[in-house]
Length: 194
Image (cartoon, rainbow, N blue to C red; front, side):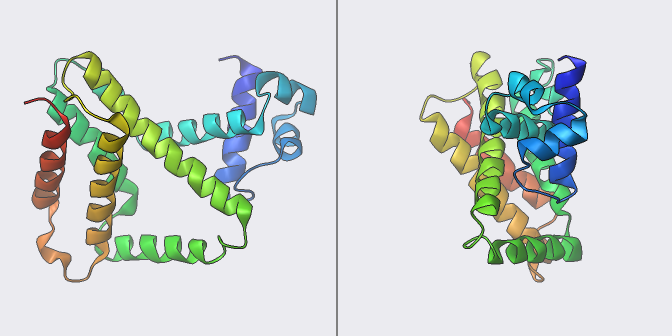
């Protein structure tokens, strides 16, 4: 990447992370990056391209996945590590409950706020693309079972969502790391070749 493009992505990411705008405007991003709107449009002809790049950067920063390419580690273990990383920001116990409370509060205004709804859809697509990219890497190695890739991605994300919600339940004392790991291993076994 070049310096100007990096500055644009950094500016847009900062605006989203700081909660100033869920879908930052061209004007706001250009001003923060110290570039003109035409320069921003040169690098990102559409707002969607910019937002996809921002979400990918945020996901990469939040959920590093370099080890998915490390073929010295079994595919099952690499995918497990990546999926466990998706659970990290949720926390456990009270922290997980607070995470879900805040998330549900943010949903209250979604029906009337098209921009927030669209931003959440972008984030969801980004998470799906991330999981799909992991399966693509493993598929190239012959480690993914044949089948509908979009269903495999949805299945894994649904299991992650279930474990994440389980962490927030007060009576989930028996959902420890070992049991979580076991549930994720069962899900992984459903999408990988034996």
